Length: 527
Image (cartoon, rainbow, N blue to C red; front, side, top):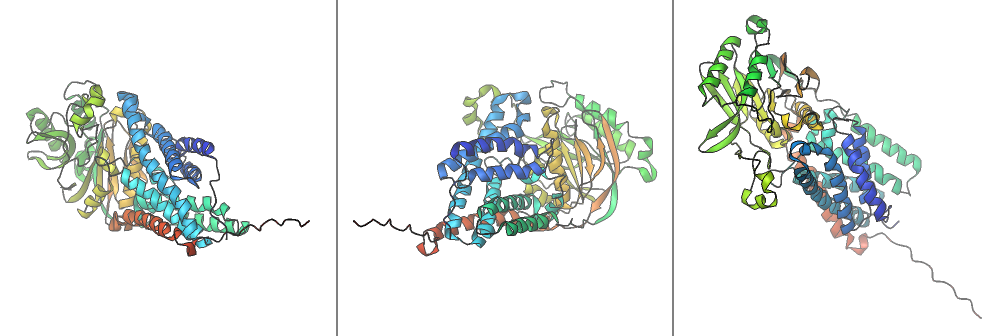
């Protein structure tokens, strides 16, 4: 037996490799969208972590995290400058550093506790994949609800791996990706295995991962949906007069052909983006009157975004508006963006950057209502902007019987950056994951109607006014991902933790350690 391999790279080279891994990893995401580079980036991170000690493992993980997020979320600096961008990147990198410690401990302990080929090629990649997902889980839930942006599976919306999210969900696909890369990285270090056998094993593993068939997402019937992108001045710093965004939405809505108002072509609902119906129609008679007139014209309910106030609390709200009846249902955004839509612990954070904190003049309260509307007998799941990254909210709407998903968003604050395409990619994965059509409607783009298989049914050019009208399939299937829900995430993260703990215990048992041949003592020549 061989002793566990030492670090294949000196620390200085591992740090450089980790720094280079970030941009490579990001290139797998939209809008560059070269999805195979995500696997290359993961391999660079794992190779840099392999064989390190805890301290250098943290350093390598931190450097990889910083280099990735500084590129991946550079759009956060567009209007607010470098402070929020750097602060968010450093925070996420700290989690990457902690995750790096766990990864490097796994690389040190598992081969010692389980020194066989099965341990190194069977167990070790599973532990590595599980620990990677554990880190993604923590960053996606803590602090203040977390930041799930940048999970490696979110890069695969247009890859052959995309159908797998219907089976395993986003976290499950992240696990499979890292497991595969960890196996391929570890294989060359298993020198007692013949080269041909290593190549065969790698080929079989890759084939198995990419041969997973698409889930047969069944649908029953359609609903005719019109979605409107007004391209109004919806940015936080546009300083537009109140009602300007509403006026652009009304103008573009009136461009929907008259044939869509009556007969077989009549739309069943009209969907507007987040924050599109301001002032709040539940308080402003003129806005309410205009929505009523549109509702009567199209003989259809409107799903619109607004800001509501109840009991001295502000909410980012989606309204189901029916002419003559007003708001018959509403959903308040459950996952407002911390330090974007509200400032948690404002008194504590304000002294660090008072000018930036004071820019956020109002704090939205997280909602508590269910996220499904009954629109003329069609169950529509509602997602408002950042809600789309929250796995639990997808589970909630599926349990609420959603047949289609309406994802309302406002991307105006991020301009023509990667953020729009990154969010659209997540929305596409959600459609596949749930087996539901999804209407992603933005104030400025990117707006698309996406089928249950991830295909584009209709789209609007970014940063131009436009509308989509389509017969949208209604989903009836229950995918394995939505059936098992977050249990998949807990399972694979638990496997990583349990495997690491088992290796920690096993490495202390001398009977489990690999035998190291003793060097023969030098023979001294007799005189």
